[in-house]
Image (cartoon, rainbow, N blue to C red; front, side, top):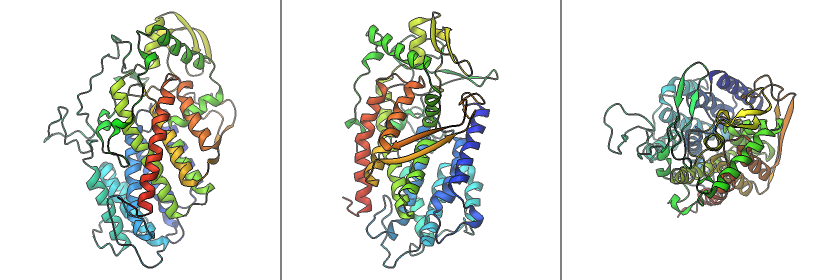
Length: 487
């Protein structure tokens, strides 16, 4: 994502935050407010956009941040619920009716300790989050009879249990899988993954080819499979991801030439017939904060969720997507499938194709196939199965089960010219995206990846199938902790 697009995205999300949450730190009402929604989320989002950059390729890192922080919320206020048991902290339940003030204080301290572990370079931001609310970031107590102590211990326990969960957050595992003593690189791949193709040469046309990404200023970078070690990460809601398998992507095998060409032709047809609505939905779902993240805020408002319910719901949908990502990365690693941009160039070379011609070009019929690009930037991991489709499927299913309804009723205004791909050009007029149900939301999310040219059609249902399975398992896992029925 180039600097202009990142700045535009950040500005858009900050605007969304300011219109969704009316209070800021100076006026925050501890007794009636919602610290996760009004304080923590607006503080975290700009940091992750700037330091991690949400998008299809960075979703695994975004999900890890959001899941761990919502885990800390869940554990910090479990004692204030009649039956709930935390994931990594089991505290005695409070016998008296707790106030929102206590819950909010516990949540804020828990968030602080998780975020200084996940994003230590932003320590001053996390300190300021507490200080502006009159809370002391230097407080260090394990007195769990106080909300401060509950939050601190809950946050630290999440950190303790997740710093070495297989993601290599600390960089203490070297590339060869041995212990790294010096010059540690956080999140370094230790699985030994090596792409079979280079960004310049496609020797194995069935396999993933890293893209050569340009900043537009003369600088080029070759993609690397983002966090392939995610397949080894410890899930929350199940024990072994090997129980979730995607069938072989037979149409991505060049030996099945008719299938290989056929799916490439489908992508080109979608590209040539892109509508304004499809473009905006593709951009919307590519941004996991704006789609997955803000759908939780929409649900909280639509279903009038109180603070406790919002924490339970937000943790649930994050666990559903996070645990899905582990299984999906296992399958991406296993199949290592080719992306559309590589296959299209391989099939047709410099022959002319009809497709979307790039920003502000509309549909053209004289594009050499080896110059074709997808509408959305191609993600830095193998194609099959679709990660975005799986995340949305898991998120939507878990949401439906928790809320007891498929109703979403969500309208998202899209101002004229606000596109990140075609700024000032698309959409041609003010428009709106509308999702009547969670089912619509999940279906459009999956389809948008094909419209945008980053996936072949078969990748979508294969991802959705795994996502729905894990969404159900995640729901049962979180509900067992809410009900106190932890085995």
